[in-house]
Image (cartoon, rainbow, N blue to C red; front, side, top):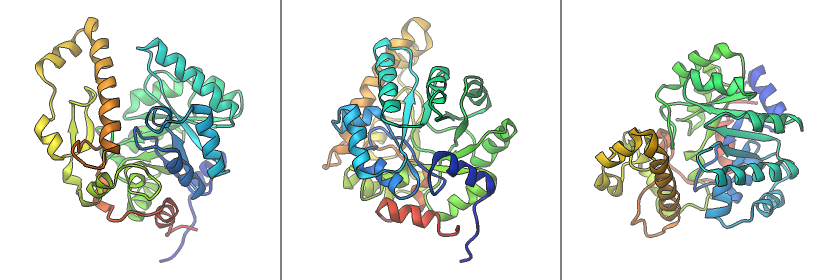
Length: 330
């Protein structure tokens, strides 16, 4: 296969982040253990830590968790910030974590939900970059109005909270904004990676492919389920967070159904009760996802994944995964 160079835009992207390849290891709850985050960075991409995974699931004090990753790699790592103002305690904790991350030298942040203005101000003050998760134009415009530098474009093949549009349509909608666009969703091999760059994305964010890696601490039964699954096995469930989430259609998912019950719908429809229902879903999903991802018995087969499962058929090291993705490029 003939090697070819990355586009100028992709080269600028990697130079700005201080990485070798335009590959982001997406932040995942509960699968972003520090060994996985560090391994993606060490392989030449950039691993993005998910702070609740780091602390609650994998048991690291936040600052010490960052320092542990620094022992595993001296390459850049990033941090995910979920902007959630419904809980004052959560918001204060996230602000503290951002301060610690900046103090420890983290300079790349991926924000989700809400207005990332306060994060952008802090990160820019030390020369860092902020990219914002978006599924459509209106969220992109809000992110850019609040100071972000680029966009993580979450399409309809992504795991977790997927978007509604395919990669091409989403790129066409957002390309006029003239900021770097990263493809998130459906990338699991060199062919899908190359297709994304050919569309015009400067890089790709991968989640599901890195779950099926040696360094991820998710259970083997979870990884084997990803390997066996096809794109048609990925369904959207409303019963996890109240918002459709991409999961493997396992026995557990089939038993519970995909749609919200009448009571949950009623609670979410009222401004007075919506917050309480969201809080309930958040606490429930945090506990359920942690238990299912770490339960070797596989009885709680409640596993997030995207449609890139169709191209994943082996468990490899992160280094091998990154090399496979980049095999067509110099």
